[in-house]
Image (cartoon, rainbow, N blue to C red; front, side):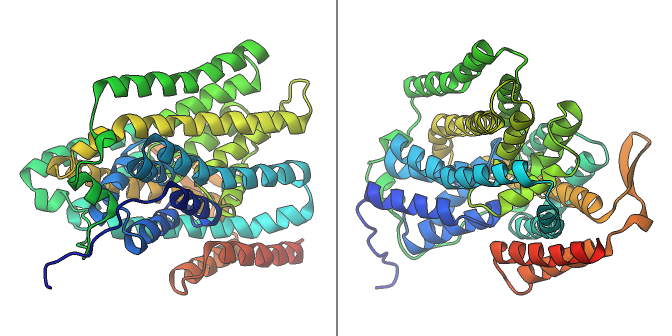
Length: 456
């Protein structure tokens, strides 16, 4: 009969959820946009475990947080379904397969990175990665830039970070402030990210309606416990490394640096790569110029969050500065330290903040703030796309400062026409012909290798 809804399943078996999170962890290629789309299809559309509006509410909160939004979203959804054990299962399984793949690829890269075949393959992969970032701008822009106001915010964010080198946290805070004010004055223009109506009630929403979601209600005592436990898991390993290896060891420096990154990496991997590359190359001397692009290329070929590129940085830093250890052992410890310091805070943000975010569902001003933040992230990712374009396509780039602006100026005569052709072909393959990420990267590696050897 019209107006009736199909009854939702009573509960989701924990084992079934674990199998789904593992499936997502193993097959989650395509970066955050692809992983979020996969979770939406599997969790919202096919299984109706979570409603569209609740999914987007959780996603907007994760976009606001520092760290990888797709992994945090998986943790949030797992927590909604099965409390803390569900959040742990979803968050860990989202990362673990990709982390293992990334470790193996890092070993091969560190051991054979100077081999001509590897260099040839990465010539094509870098061009494909450029196309991947451009496509990420296009996909995120479609979701977030719904009107001229959101478009203006994206442009301002791009100008602020690209020309004036404004800190990303400052851009996020400014966008949130604009959203809070705009949501009160013109909610129709600012609260633009909404869910679609669905014909049946989702499992979690039915549980909320029936009063079975006590763990999703804010509780001060529980919040304090979460804060203490996860802060200890975050800080104590850092102290242990300092005591065991010394404060100047590469492991301690990695722990401190990537802990800092865990606090300021708003917008996920794309938004932080330029800063990490600058610090890893110029600040610490861990990487050579261009190796961050190699790392991102590796991360694109593995499942899981793109922020695993930081694991690549941690592995290479320790491999090259083993401090008396075997390089492979040192690199493995460096990878573990980096991964731990990157992802442990993600569980803290979700387990501490999610109950309060759930209590704010339907708050127009919060929705407006999250919408403006998402629009600002479009500008930040566009900044990364331009930065990558300049450094992939041109051999020589100068930095010019004019009236307080920092402007990278490429030497047009140093344009790599082959890299440009590969990047355009990869972009057309993904956007026009909808080819998968792995297919495009593999084809780019083969074509790039052929071009590399022909020009040698």
